[in-house]
Length: 95
Image (cartoon, rainbow, N blue to C red; front, side, top):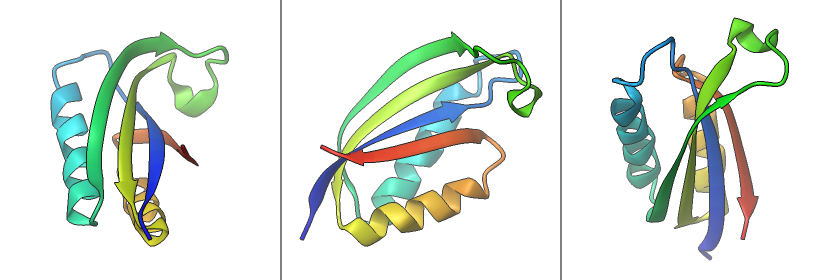
């Protein structure tokens, strides 16, 4: 049974925002190819971290995805995106 989820991703910026759309596209492809139905994508933007020791980064680009998927899809996507060097953090919750 499909459920509604919200996923928040913190992307590495490495001092430039040109690659953000490509990264958002990669996450979109990963979700859709795994069987998720995207409802909304919110580009929250660049945020400074409270602690600069986090992966030696001072800031990241936050993106929120709202989608509908089977519970197993979330596990699959999370595993694949852990291997990506573009995604620093990811968090999912049911809506």
